[in-house]
Amino acid sequence: MTDHPATPRSRRERPAKPALTREGIVTAAVEIMRAEGLQKVTMRRLAQELDTGPASLYVYLANTDELHAAVLDRLLGTVGPAPAEGTWRERLETLLTAYTVMLFEHPALARAALVARPSGKHYLRLVETVLALLAEGGIPAAQAAWGVDVLLQHATATAAEHATQDQSPDAEADWDALTRALREASPDTHPQIAALGPLLLTGTPQQRLSWSFQMLLTGITHTPTPALADEPPA
Image (cartoon, rainbow, N blue to C red):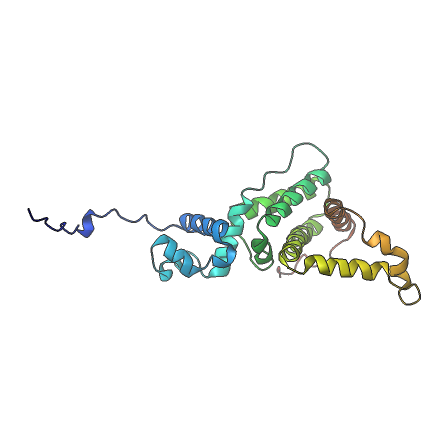
């Protein structure tokens, strides 16, 4: 008995591909990042994952930078709200630390976050919460408006710096060389370094991060902005 070849299926009988949406595209991008790293999150790789052409994605996202910004915003959704207990400064520090730790967990994203400009709902929620806590602390509106940028920029830069160092094969050797140079600095040529050498290397990363946030909050509290209220925003 001769086997008959299978009858080709009509295209109408094949299951339709899910319709593209911005949410679905970003979800796929996050999955690629977790599995392959942020460097693989490109329009071409994403199109391959979604079984479509790259041109279809540009309807929803202008370029790769906007895609990375959307991925960052999605991960900002994993940063919990500020705690209900504690002073406004303690709660704000906890929130900023949580944001920094999230970036620590995604080293490539931490570096991309220095140039990515998220504008999604999770980023807006973070900014709104920071501003609310600054207002609770009695920070003048103009200082709070400029201060939120400084606080988030510092957190992002800190995560990016440590992410870069951790991935460098020479990181430990570089740190040893710096430590040795600071400890062996001559009081004749570098009297300040020689006097403060041990202090320059003290403190855990957690202690230094906490201090830096509190230092910035003190500066924001006591440093008025120039009188630019009537000028358009930069």
